[in-house]
Length: 192
Image 1 (cartoon, helix red, strand yellow):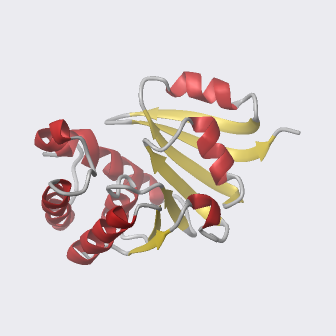
Image 2 (image 1 turned 60 degrees about the horizontal axis):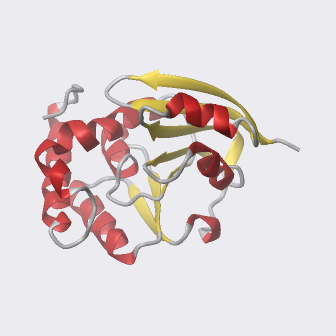
């Protein structure tokens, strides 16, 4: 059960997503088998937190390395905002399409590596468990609009990753702690 409160309708849609996730996880490695019993607090809450943050941002949204759809698909369910899910693994793309269909989430799935996805400028870029922050920023800089925001879910190393990324990029960072740790990136520029 989620520790974050959502409407009954949203909770029902998230429950459909969780059922689909657990069903597909038997044959496609989407989450750790050990996380299946605690999927709400280990995974869903991260997507809910990002989904709640999306309401402050207008424009296109891309979730990089979507995998199991966290945070992107969950955020789309919560915010009812269209999200482009970018994933290179064809089996995971099939899952994302099915989960999107079952939940009625406003998502599109781009079966591609991030570098060759051909994304237009995005207002928001999200990712979770994809890469260290400096690599996420390198992937984001070509597709993030100048006024865009990065919402990157991280763990206990968030501060260290921010400091490491400052060697290659200029940006403003805010670390938001709640059910998860989200690094909010604004004003992203590559250092000369």
